Length: 269
Image (cartoon, rainbow, N blue to C red; front, side, top):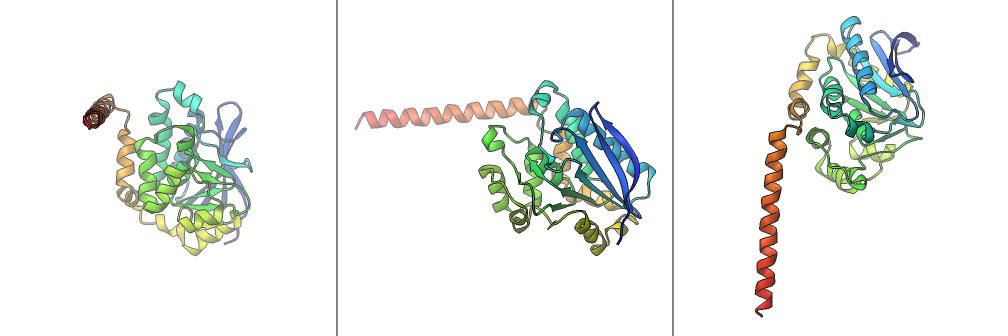
């Protein structure tokens, strides 16, 4: 499949970035984001990408969507934690909404990971159907164990559903940084290369045809039911958090009592 880029439209990301959508071939679209310096996931970023996906789904013939970055060093550097903490509605209304859109999108989606993809960036890539990674630049990882940030339920479940238990453990509990070939061997990505390789991948798997019967998004919704449900509900509900808090308090109380009993028994020896 040959290709010749033709710009279709763009969506602004706040005041200093944009998502540019081009047509690479018949029914093959590329969505390129560029939000300096490193494509952090913020409300404006997520909403712009979401809008671009909606425009493609509603205004153009369905085919294949490739996402990538206009910044060579980064696919994305993950969440802007300061922004996320300052905006309590960001996670569910913007981030999770974008992830659900990708996970259930009515066309095949491919993340072309051209540079680093850390934490939330890798999660975003995992919401795609396929991942192709630059073999010459970039690492992908979950570094929450190093940052001291717990994973929310859908952040974890997507890796539980899409990777092996061994890879899941290495990602979450070790924070390993994967190069492209390591990620391929671990089953995190589906291939290595750049845009030429992605277009060849689309052609080889005949992905453009997969939307013709109109059930592609429905099939994905059922495949990833667990994560879709968690993205809808999350773990943000006050009653859920309160239940977990009480359970943790009870477990701590019992642990402290066991230690106290042990110390008492030891003192009698």
